Length: 119
Image 1 (tube, rainbow, N blue to C red):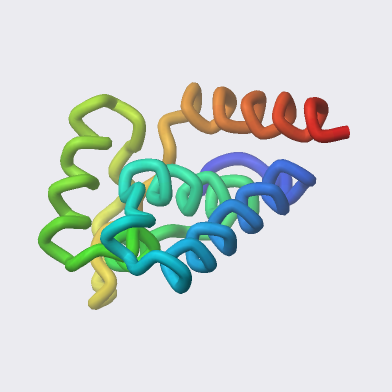
Image 2: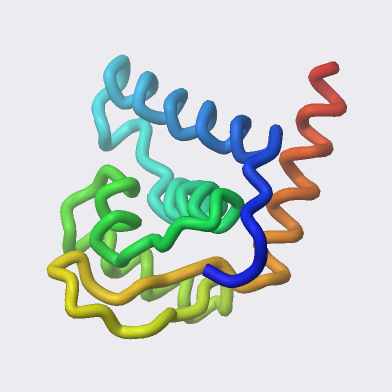
C-alpha cells in the first residue's frame, strides 16, 4: 500500500456493501447475487483506504465465486487498468494488488455521493 490510510466513512460504506452482498448470497444463492468485478473493487478499496495489503487470494475469495472464475474476473479488471500489481510475495496468498490511484479516488467520490444522497 502506498500513502497514508484514510479509514473514513467511505471505507465503512464499502464494508457495508460487502456485508449486503453476503446477505444477498444467503437469500438468493451465490449465482444470483454474483457481482465479482464490483466486489473485488470494493474489497480492494477497503484495503487501500485502510492501508493494508491485499493479496490475489484474498480478493479472489472476496469475489465469492469459484477460484478459476475469480481469477478470470481479476484478469478482466486488470486488463481494464483498474488495478495495479504490487510486489511479488512469498506468501501462499500470492502477489499483492491494489487499486489504480485514479480508481481509488473515483470510488471514494462515488461513495461520498451515495452518502450525501442518503443523508
